[in-house]
Image (cartoon, rainbow, N blue to C red; front, side, top):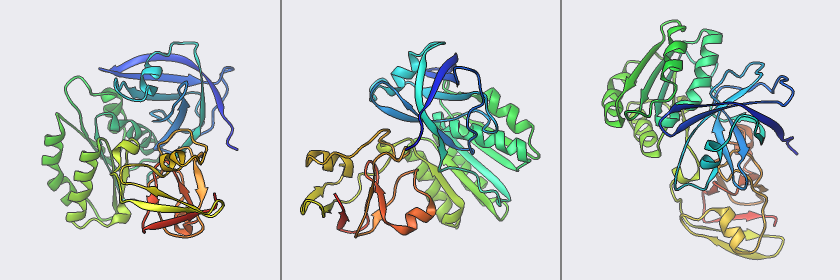
Amino acid sequence: MIATLKLVVTAVEDAARDIRTVTLATPDGGELPSFVPGSHLVVECEGPANAYSLVSDGVLPEHYRISVLRVPDGAGGSRWIHDLGVGDTVSALPPRSAFAPVATATKHLLIAGGIGVTPMLSHLHAARRWGRRVQLLYAFRDGYGAHVADVEELVAALPGGCVELLSDRAALLGRLGEVLGTQPLGTHLYVCGPGAMIDAVLAAAQAGGWPASRLHAERFGVDALDPGEPFSVTLTGSGSTVDVPSGVSLLDALDGAGVAVPRLCRQGVCGECRIPVTAGTPLHRDLFLTDEERRAGDAVMACVSRSLGPTLEVPL
């Protein structure tokens, strides 16, 4: 069981249009668990739980900071966050990351679109601490450039640090060919932003010969994932079979069949909906399992992950 953190809001500020930064601390002001760059904080938002990237420094932190884009037609989590005030309390799971920088990289190429800049902030804090070589491309619409001053200050402190602020996705994509083609050997690429932008960046990198092992993407959630191929899941406990259509999560399909599976974030981050797999090959799309756990293939996150083959078998 992962212990839940009880936190209090100590500051609220607008980072850009529709983007609010919330600072959280323990009620007694004590030290919080450290976190690696690229980490999320899974916040329980009075019903849904959402994962938000931490934008602060992860070493011996006395506070956590998250920046959240208000999504009017979302599930309600961002609206709840935007309504928080100083003194309010929230519950959250400890930070975890599936988007950490690779320590052996010769250079870190960060590409962010819109609110996708948030995980890059903790990358930049770590790069400054360890003297890493970083280049950042940051595209945002007019008025939606969150943390621009923070980014420029952090990059300015880096050896050979470079940041390019781009007016929109088209400008970003126009720079990709040259930027991807002029990186030193051993550079790792990290991209976060809208799904279409991530796909375009990864496709350009792959076309340019970048190995998959040096490409790292952070997607916002299940909505950013493709609908996937249909498959069926055999429940060995009951002997029944459940069909999982394209565009329907394994978790929702099990719900529809009356099989209750614990869940929290529904974004493949918190690990709450992990279920064991006894046959078949999972298509992992979560941010929770380690590389070793993925290779073992004996567990799946029902909220986002699917099956590589036509069937999956679980002991439910």
